[in-house]
Image 1 (cartoon, helix red, strand yellow):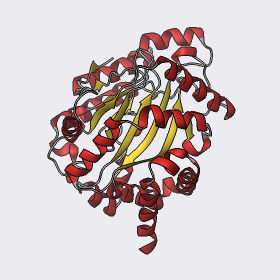
Image 2 (image 1 turned 90 degrees about the horizontal axis):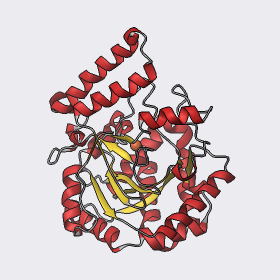
Image 3 (image 1 turned 180 degrees about the horizontal axis):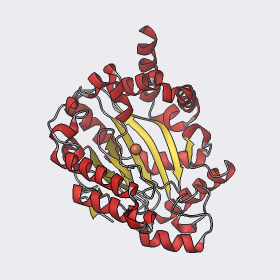
Image 4 (image 1 turned 30 degrees about the vertical axis):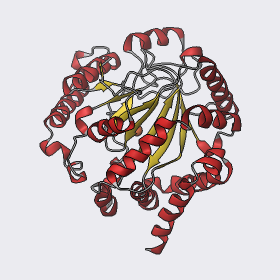
Length: 351
Ligand SMILES: [Fe+2]
């Protein structure tokens, strides 16, 4: 839908990837062309979601396939590329070890661009409410973001992410972000377009078929503002930091219209239900968190203090504890993760 974002090559040296990341808050780490691996992972993924009655997302502690985790570790995470990237990144920002943490699996989750809410967001948005987090976010040692493995390429059926590249600028310290709209021209432009878009929706544009119009308008506005889509092959490992604005790539409007014709459960209003089966077009995403101690402290501070997250926060902490004890990824390989988590929890308890 949008133009492709020019991402670094997975073949770049770690140092170059870190430079790219420092400038763009996103980097491609590695690729894997193993079709059999892709088939096995997709099969195991579908099986776990079936067992859980096809939720939209599944936290990692609820996804019990040891076989899946062993494959993910041995074929993807255990790569020279990822290790070297984390180690270079840690050197650059002097932030201590960077490790990965449990997050979730998502199946057929598409943003509802047909509704009238913006789907672009930054994963650090919630943290700006808290002084501690705000200070932490402006600290260069605060590294935190999502490591994504996509089990399909990003196509007209979605399958990847779109980003607003201008929402992250090199050499600006973290204090820029809360007030981004004050001096970032592109961001300002997006904001104005957004207000206009909401007004057009509100006054209904003379009863044009609104949901479809919404998409076209939204895409047009995002396009003018400079949104880009991140084109990746299936089984790519991508990292994007919590500061960059992004959304899941929606299904192309024309494809979406076809899907509506084929399937009663899909509509502009409801979007694509999580339990839908689109066969080989099913969208499977694997999300880990990655981060430094500083980044993790700030995230755990959010979990502990945000009332909206409160219902979730104990579940998330229990889930992580379970994972560190049971999942080979942390038990045997990324052993640093549990220590870093305990340190973040201790910091909260000392206060
Ligand atoms: Fe996000």
